[in-house]
Image (tube, rainbow, N blue to C red):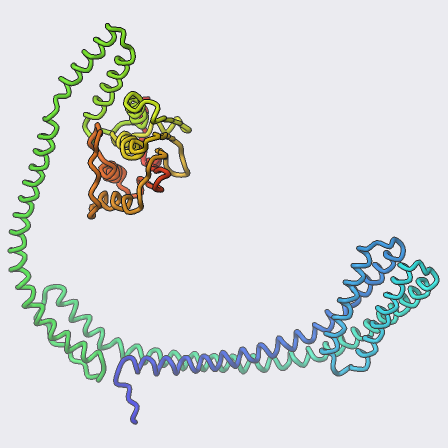
Length: 502
């Protein structure tokens, strides 16, 4: 089968693989030479290091043996054993390295074995209170230690002389290898540059022709000459497609111009429909607001408060005052922001009303852990609907009643308002339905809001918080059926929404 470079991919793969093969072969060759050189250097100095370590281990072994004989200290015995083991271990390593000097290594190993055996005998004699044997063994150990030290020093001297001669030979050989490597690297670089320049020219020349024609077309000039490419590859196919595209674009632009006029007329009509829908929504909101005459109700409640005070009905007077406060707060415009302090005060008034309604069935608690958070601004009617929902749907459905706690505190970034009740709780599907509805999706149908005073549900609260703070992470809802519900409202403290008039 005849091999031909008739595609860009084949050309690029061929030239790149050829360059990579050349560079890789040089790299492998240099790496092998370097590894050989460093392995030889390591072998040269490893024996010297082992011999020096053996001297230290021998000295430490004898030192700790003397300490144990004098003091019978267990730590000294352990230290002796550790250094003796290391001494034997290094002797084994040295045996594998200095194969040419087997006789001296074998002699050194036998001396070390004699040293450790007699040292163990001295330790046993000390433990058995045999002073004469202990003294005899120790003197013998001391003498063997001197022989070992002399043997190590002799081996070290011999190894140093061999290493010096070997290193000189390696250095001379390394200079020759470096010169050969340099010549090889220069040759590879020159060859790679030639290949790169050739590939670049062969591939970019037709592409530059296409680029120049495309630039003329981008300026609106569709009368440029057709691009002619002689190479039998994808660039030729691309040039032919470009020539066809040029004529197609000319026709397509005319069609777009006609369509844009039609779409402009449709967009104008759609904007008119949106404006009409906005007007209808505003009219509907005004219609709902006009169903209540707040001034009439305020005046009526105030008259009731005065009547209760005249009749010395203090509880009734307090009840009506709280009712008036809650109602006055609830009928304010929802687009006017309030402080967290206002929200808490309104909730406290609402709680007093619920105490009259439910009596001892429901208990409440309010805890403010960070007074600075009370100055934060927020949308109105956020907390009352949540407390209201906890009273009616959470605890109101329990015969034995329950408790609602409100806490205001701060975490690393946000101010947190936590509302906890020990009511009937709700399932995960209900929570998901609330969040889904607040996000504009289909949700489960809500229960009828019996007994509500605001007419604002949890979904409405979530939507207004998200619109106000321009973020989705504004509320956390967790609940367990039969145990209760925990709702945490997050108020960002880095938004600069702090009231300074308090």
